[in-house]
Length: 146
Image 1 (cartoon, rainbow, N blue to C red):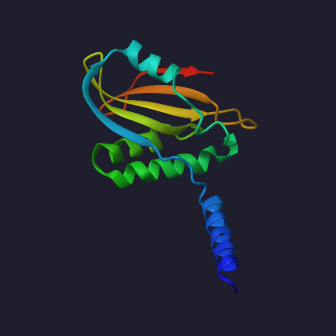
Image 2 (cartoon, rainbow, N blue to C red):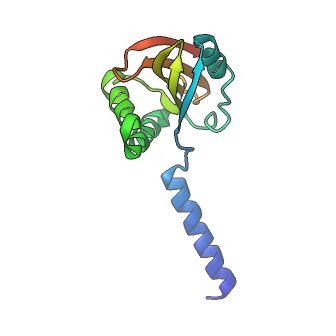
């Protein structure tokens, strides 16, 4: 086999492996010691760019959600606590958590969870915001953006 053929075979193998893993962007988790208002959290969610996600069929939401929750658990600490809360408290959710901020909203310790979702036969092209109290996970606010 020539070097050129070997490179093509390796490239094709890598492309197939990447396609099988889905190569979905991972969940972003950040801590923010600054204070936000609920209006600021809502504005962030309303303007969230779904570009990385909108090409994905909504039928993949379950596996992408499981991958995101696994990623959170792997981080340990408060991220793992949140993953457990999202698993136990949102059992029927078809949303994929994609951006989480651990911080304060209106002087309350919170997790701000932005997730993408879509209709069963559609794409992951919509955004939902959950503001959950920390550490108990009670819903402070929720809203959706088409």
